[in-house]
View 1 (spheres, helix red, strand yellow):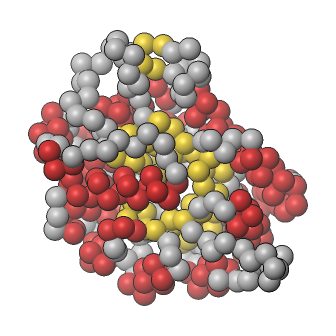
View 2 (tube, helix red, strand yellow):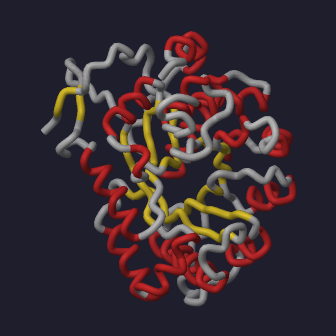
Length: 334
């Protein structure tokens, strides 16, 4: 079953080209969902990966993916029958802020079972384990609980050979130590696959930290933080050292609105609420940091996301023929 897309004068002027690897679409500020998805598609966003942050929020993310998938109750097509919304995927996991609640309410064993159940029943749309990691900045959960919940999610990623969607804030040394720790259930006759994934929302700009993440084989996710002339200055200085085949972009909506987005997006009724259609402005700033064209950033980040997460239906495009600049101006008031 499908439903017509809402009337929208800003029909896409080019094929979708971007992948938002991290958007919190279950957040209350991003409801209703349909107009947000329509805006995103019109701004060239081909796929969105919804971030799971707890068992409940991961279940909501799965439900949202199902709603807008072919056969879902809100699957949306244009007059010609072509899909006019981004494809939705999601992660399943527990954010370090939620680690304490998970341990208190369910315990590590039952939490792992719940995550495995969600993933294994929805492998067609669940593309990564996470958001998982350590956050020693706010310390909403004890360090012990964060360690425990992160470790069980690393085990899930190894057992299912899935990528990770990683979070680290003010916890680099213990975080890397856990990532490099030998799994407790390691058997020489059945070696675990190497961990792989993306360090989501990399903001520190610390070249040593960046080099270590890259040496471990991880991709690097860049948000609108890079467009902040003050807080993002250190990040801007190291951007060019991230290999293009390890680079990904994300909005982390509704947070971290790009500072180079139009004033109309940063003010007014919904001012300050980041949305996936603003991903183009993240890509624009990243391209500026590399000193290359926006089309090149779109090509690499889309291909990297498709390969790591196994996304279906990523279009093969001649990126050099896409007029990003004129498109941005025409849609700058979204």
